[in-house]
Length: 86
Image 1 (cartoon, one colour):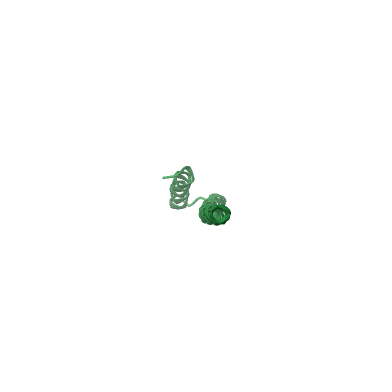
Image 2: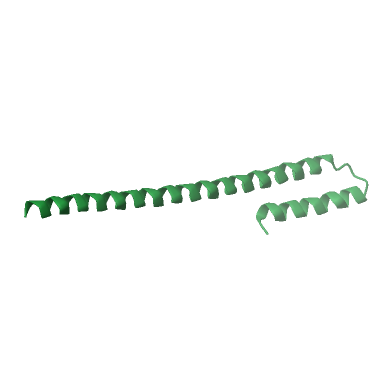
């Protein structure tokens, strides 16, 4: 469990205790909501970062493939020229 999840669980338990004793609990509910939103935003950020990382890796692999293909074409071109000159 992450630190945010632990904090949320602790705050929810505290709020539930306050409700049981008939204390006002809006402030603690606001804090819980705020941290729940941070948790969601953190998750979204992480997912977006992972998606971007995957896209970058795919782009890198394609670039590598194209470079290798270009090298092979250049090699063949040079080989054919060498063979013609013989």
